[in-house]
Image (tube, rainbow, N blue to C red):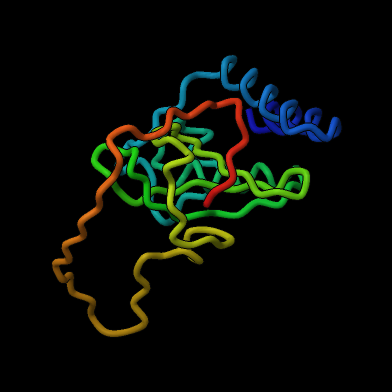
Length: 168
């Protein structure tokens, strides 16, 4: 499966077209079994980026890592992005990836669970380790209750899957 994906995307990359890359990815997606997104407990910190591809399960972090790995294997600059996604139900933190195509960064969401135009960047990095929400350096870390209030327009944008979207 991985080589099929790399082969299709590689063909699109040689044409130098974002549209070709998107079309090749769509063809591959239609020919392979549907990925199951948001399957809590399907992966853990020991799993690599290929795990969600091989098992067809994962959470947003897994699909973001997979997207970054595939792009980098093709020589496409890619980075992991931690975002806030008002389009999720319930609203929550989310992981996506960005790829640099034709000199611009575009956001991709492997789960397709939130409209890309509604995403708010929290952090970007090489992978999830660079964008951790909390990194304990020593001692015991206890949880503290935090209340966050977010107001989102109830009419979130519809995500046109064919349009390139830069992450704000």
